[in-house]
Length: 630
Image: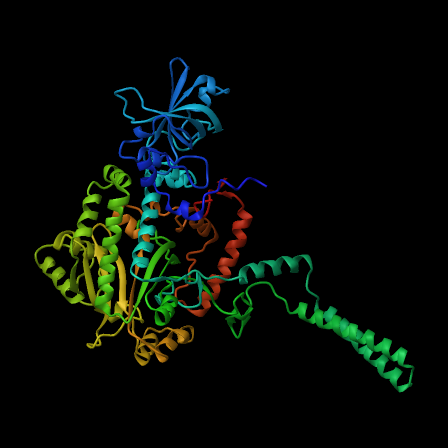
């Protein structure tokens, strides 16, 4: 067993900070490794110069490398992902048996030990590492490595999604994403919210739009059955009839033995044979009923045979479930992945994305708007305070005003207008000559161009629009006294448009029940939700923030696929396969007829089989990953 006497107490690890070690003139080692994160060196106020003379270990990937002095030594720019800046590493030829050329290729991983030294006067770096030992090298063939020194477009990087985090842009976005997640938990924890984990698999549709991914084992079970029936064909009618005759014969034998008053042993043996025959017949009859394909009952798909015994889906929102905790323990929030089966190829849509969804107990729409505004301001200020280098990179490469935009949001009160006022403003703009692609009239769902006009041109700051027409909002939003609008609100921000959608929830049982029915939704999946309105109901409010949209807003990145580590969206190769199979659609909207829904599931089943038959080849060429990722 290894020596554990040197392990620091957990409290000591928890209290260790970059600031503490910087003040002590020490490089901060990682608490669970012997390496020093590059951030703890170069992010000091003196750029690391105060650490000169310390012997440390670092590990990372070579951004650039060059041999100098006719191969006598090499300079490496090493980055470990802890920050944007690189650490310059100097390696003498005598330290590397394989030669310096083994180290200098972009993408090479290295772990080295050496002394920190101040470079000669005039150098850009404040500190560099003079290597004494090379502990590890993960070599790269420059001719094959897909991430060169030169900058690639974000679209190109999506083709090498497993390597793109090694680029400055994607690693910076990863740190910004991490900071926003940290800020999210900090904001809600500081304000007394309880973090609740809501389910990924659900039986209810929060939005009522029907654009849900179905979770089922029916297709895989049908495939297993088909393989089994091919390998072991079911008995024919003749086989079953023959088994019935055997049972009849054995039953007659038992009767004859009883009539003849045979001995108990003979009768017992005959009865045992009869029972075996009956058991064999029962198995034959059951197997004869097996048929390939999707199980049906009364003309409908028999979900009783499915894993959960009913239809189940990937969640589109954790809101309904988290409301149950708001109505029991007070203010709560959930933060996790959600899924929409929208066959959309826009730069703003993903099939899998993350949502932050708080619920505030005993709160109305005004409280909801106050919380949403405070949360967005908190995150904006957090990025300004914690991610200055990464945000400067975003400003340099993608959106020169992104930092100014964060400052404006963090320091400016949000405008608040009713939906009716918003429409009136847009109508006045149209009268003044402004042209919109989408028609402006009361009752429409505001388009992105309308939202951006309000935030970027009219008010030039975030805008909260509230009291929307009930016809364009979800069933759970509280009906206002005018019976035309609901207590809903959207937070609109420059660059993105809608960032947050929320509402005061309908707490009146009869009203919400009628709303569900009016929207053509079945009551049964929402019975538990209605129970909250029958037993100890309270007024409560909440909202949902699209986490990736917040990152788009903060960074100025144009495509949502570039701000999530592994984007999920309809794939061009999957589309190609669908075309080859003659399939025009894959999802099941709620308005689709029963017959079409059954047909779609059968088509999905056939497609799954066909994809396997196609193997790894599409149109004679190797097929890339259907899910864009490892």
